[in-house]
Image 1 (cartoon, rainbow, N blue to C red):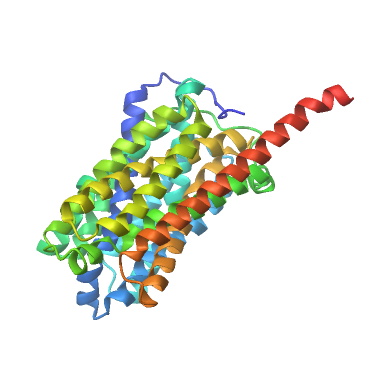
Image 2 (cartoon, rainbow, N blue to C red):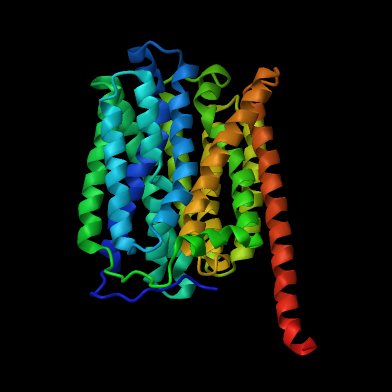
Length: 404
C-alpha cells in the first residue's frame, strides 16, 4: 500500500513546498526542545521549583498525544493545504499566549494548547511531501521535512535559550509564534492545491486503529524511542554532575546531538528507500549500542560528545517508522501519520519516567544509558514481532486464491 496521492490542481514546486513544511517543523522543534532549556527561567520568574516547572513540558506532550488523533479525524474532509494552515494558526496562537501567561496554571493551559496541532501538522506534512515524489523516494521526502526539526535542535534551541538568558523566557515562545505565522504564509503560497478526498470521513480515519500493523508500529515507536528521551532529558545534569564539565559546555553537546540527528535523518531515510526493514533493524541496533556506551563514557567529555553524536544519529529511525505507517495504514493515512507523533511524545514521557526511577533508586545518572538501551532492545523486539506477523499475513493473502 502506498501513500494516497490526491490530484494537484496547480503546478507544484517541490523545493518551495518542502521549505514551507520544514519551516513549520523548525518552529515545532524549537518550542518542543527549547522549552526544556527555558524551565529554569520561567521557574524563577513564576516562583516555582524546577520539577514543578517541568510539568509545562508534560502539558505540551499531552497536548500532542491528544491533539494528533482528534485533529486528524476532525479534518478528514479538509484539503491538506487548508489543514496545514489551520494547524499552524492554532500553534501560533498557543505559543503567543504562552509568552503572555500571567501565572503558572495559565501557562500550563497554553502549553497544552500549543501541543494540540503538533502531531497532525507533521502527519499531514509527511503525506504532502510523500505525494510529490515516486514511491521509492518517499522516506527521503519525509526526511527533508523533518530536517526542520533536527536543525531546530542545532540553531533554534540555542537561540531561544539565549533569548531566555538575555531578555526573558517569554521571548522564546514569542519567536516561535512568529515562526509559525511565517510558516502559514509559506504554506498558503506554495503548498499543493490538492482537492480533498471525497471519500474521506472521520470513521474511515478511525479505522487505522483496527489495523494490527498500525498499532504494533506505534507501540514500536513508544518503546524504541523512549531510550533516546531517557538519556536526552538528563543529559545536561549528567554533563554537570558526573562529567564535571562547565555549564557552558552543555549547549555545545546539545548542538552535537542535533548535528547527529540531522545527519542520521538523511542517512536512514536513504537506506529505508532501499530496504525499509533492514534499515529499521540496523537503526535499532545502532541506537542500542550507542545508548549502552553512554553509561561507560560519561567521565570523559570528548568520548561523551562523540557518543551523543552517535545517539542523535540514531534519531533518524523516526523517519523509517513514519514511512512504514504510510505503508500499512491503508486509506486512513492522515490519522496513522499523525499518531506517530503521539507515540513519539508518549516515548518522551516513558523514557524520562523510567530514567527518573533508576536515578531515584540510587543507580546514578549514567544508568539512563542502560535504561535507554533496554528500551531500544524492546523496540527492536516489537519491530521484529510486527514484521513477522506482517509477513505471515502476506503469505495468507497470497494463499487464499489458491485455496479457493
